[in-house]
Length: 417
Image 1 (cartoon, rainbow, N blue to C red):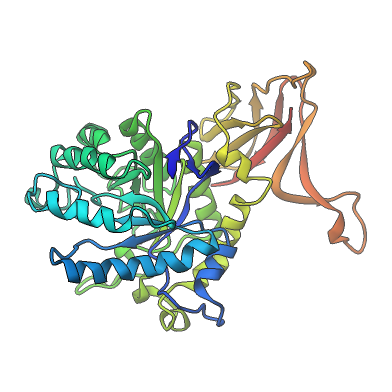
Image 2 (image 1 turned 30 degrees about the horizontal axis):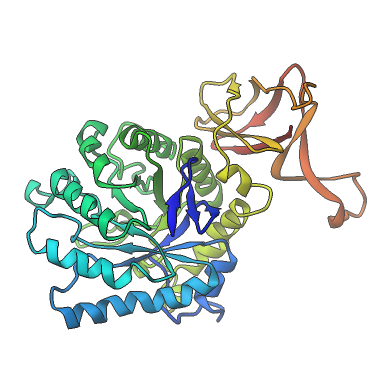
């Protein structure tokens, strides 16, 4: 049984889960570029979801059964490792097409009881303005299919992912067609920012698109799909695109900015695009260089005992604000800690003041905090002693604190209550 927690994250058999997924995963039975088991490596690095499935499902029962088995074979391996399947139903969740009224129930029945199923993926980018109007999927048929799906399987949520171009007004009708919504956004390219088609060509467009989808979602959660690689950086006839990948600094900024703007799940797309991989990775079918340099360190941070509680926690009533207009900030609160997540969208470097910290539970003022995943030695020693590292402290006075921010910097603060 998978449901949506009141905070917007998932509740999986009584445990909260912030989805951190891969779209699409390595081949089943695959190896990393240094010979490790691919799925074990993803799981050990913090991945808990895999996008699976296909765009088109056969209407022929025997053929479709073989197609489904290809996916459930993956879930058979992934689930014992702690990874759930985000199962793509392809074009079937559209009851404007009469055949889908037979096909969707058969497809759902074949998969819904698998213990490795985490969520359904609905029609992808149903309103994409880059597609001809005849290729788009209007909301009413999807709403009808969604209502039928909830009767077929009330135990798993359905997610509809949009493109980043449509205005919120054009997507509002799809709110009733899903439990969770979101969008994909891939801003790192030459030239930059072409995917979103907005005036903001900076990677901070991730926050813009997340906020737009929060508006579309209303009370429902948002999952954002972020960039490993995408079709805009792959070579094509007459368009010799130059591969470009986010750096760790850029990916970390995009991840935390999406969270600050309300994302309650994150997926990473394009690790399977062999056209832009190093040869050693292309032979494995997945971009392990990007994994080792960028994604694994980031996911290990997000799933760490220090940061993960902030991802699962509800918004805090305390409203912490920054003195700089290009700082995005949000607060989360658990029984023990107040978390302040802050990212700098602009290109300047300055010391920023924050105000609005609440008092501790005993009524006393907060005296100080720490910046997670930024370290110092306590006390400093020569030579350095790695066993005496601690998170960097930050002082608090009068319910506020100050800290330095550079371009696209991200700081995650924790204050004991």
